[in-house]
Image (cartoon, rainbow, N blue to C red):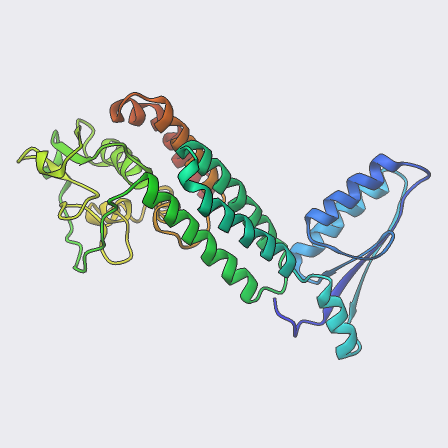
Length: 319
């Protein structure tokens, strides 16, 4: 949506008696949806199918409580009126606050534990997503806060997951699954998102009898072990793809809808990109597991049910 859109929806409410509970519930729901308040009981939103649904849902609740409600459509009659209406949806102050929180979070990293830092950043990421969802006229402020979020995530990973691989620039050859059965796979110890999800992918879809070696030093890799997610590994970052995505492409798994969606999720958490709603939750789960489990074998075992469930949901949503 942009400032040139002049079609609007108006919600006019008249709530029964002194029902303050209903009044507050309607106000909170419309505020969360990003509706502009023109006066008490009168709300405005840009006209789209999604915003019409928002007003329709509130209208149903108001009528069920014996209140009266009208939903009207109108178009701005002048540039001045259009600018005034658009001004109701200016999220600049919200983005400035989010930027300040991200800056404070980055500066506090040396004093935080990993779990605490990831919780704090996940909370800000949720607020960024919520603000963006009600930013009907996005501009530079939204771009700036998204860039700042990616920078903060990179700073956090640099501190708690150093030595992330650099992307190679090459074609990704197709591999035959039968050549990768019952093998030893090796990656850096103390796994984070890409490594733990790649290990899950290997055991679930590539090599069910896979054995893993978690390396403190890369030079300790067994000669016959298949490396993943480190510089020089057989499977690691290539161009814009993270290791999980490279494995999908290498073994012809990219057409699996559930795995494709998980690839997008892993990509966002590892190097940024298109935000994914489930990202903060998965990051919190894996961060918590890293702090609780004694080693990477236990870590993989503990997060496997969550990854299995996520994959199942992604597949079911497409059926």
